[in-house]
Length: 413
Image (tube, rainbow, N blue to C red):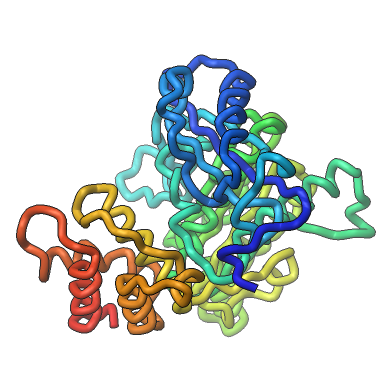
C-alpha cells in the first residue's frame, strides 16, 4: 500500500505542535481553541507539515511563532479528518536563550580543562527543526516515541521492575554521518514538547565519553560520580524530564578490552564500572532517559548491550530517504528565494506524475546511493560555490544538475 496516500479508516490522533513567541503571555487553552477552530475548517489535515493561513488570525499572529501538524498515532497515516479524527495539542515556549553550561574534567582554575559534559535547557530554540530534518525509510522515530510512552505507562501502573524489566536506555549504532547524535538531541527536544503537561521543563546532559579516559586517570572515577551527582540532582526535581546522552560509547568498551590485555591503567575499568552502576541507579527514575550512540557496533561492551532496551541500527539513507532529503533542500532554497518556485512531488507520487523535475531528482537520489545524510545536506552550498555563480534564483533543474556534478567531482561520491 502506498503510504503517501494512506488514510486510516479508524479515528486517528494527529499531534499538533504550537510554538509560542517569547513575548506571548496568552493562556494555552485560548491558543489551542483558536487553532482547533482553524483545523475544523480543513476537510483533510495533512500530517508532518506546517499549518498554513493561521497568520491571518490576529490573535494567533500576535502570540504564535509556528504551528506544525506532526505525525499521527500510527505510522503511514498521512491525513486526518477533523470530522472523525482527533488532535492532541502540544503548546510550548522554547527557552529564550541558548546557554549551554559546561562541566570540566580538571580543576576549574586550570587552563587545561577538557569538557566532560554539557547541559542545556529544553525545549531549546536551537533544536527546533532537527527532528524534521532527519529522514529514515523505516519508522525508527515513531518507534522511539512509542518506547518512551510505554515506559511512562508502565511506570504509572507501578509495574514491578523485578518481574518486567526496562532500563530506560537506548543505543543507536551505525556509521558516522547518519544522524545518530542529532536524533538523540531531537528526541530529547521532542519529548520536552510532548510531555509538557507532565513535566514543566526538560534538561539535556551530554557526556563526553572520551574525556573520561583522558590523562586524569586517577581522577576519572571521581569525575563519573561528580557528573552523575549532578544528573541525580536534576532528576530529583520531578517536574522536569532529563535526557542523558553519551556519544560514541564504544570508547568505554575499548577501555575494558584494553584493560584485559594490560594495555590501559586499571583505573579505566573502575571508571566503566562506576558508569554502569550510575546507569543502573537511573533506571528507577521515571523522569530520566539515557541515550547512547556508537560508530563501531562490534566494539560495544556486552554490559552496555544488556542494559539497552532498544538497540537500533542507523544506516545510510536509501533512495527514498535521499530523495526526501534533497527535496527538502530544494523546498528550503525556494523559501529562501535562491530557487524558483516549482512543484516537487513526494517520492510516493512520482510514478503517478509526469513531473520531469521529480524524475530528475529521483535519478540524482539513485546516483547518490551510499552517501550520508550529513553529506547530502552539504550539496546545495557546494553546488552553488562551484557551479552557480550568478545572482538571483536558479531553476530547480539547474540546482539538481549542479548538485549531481558536485557529487561526481568531490569526495562525497
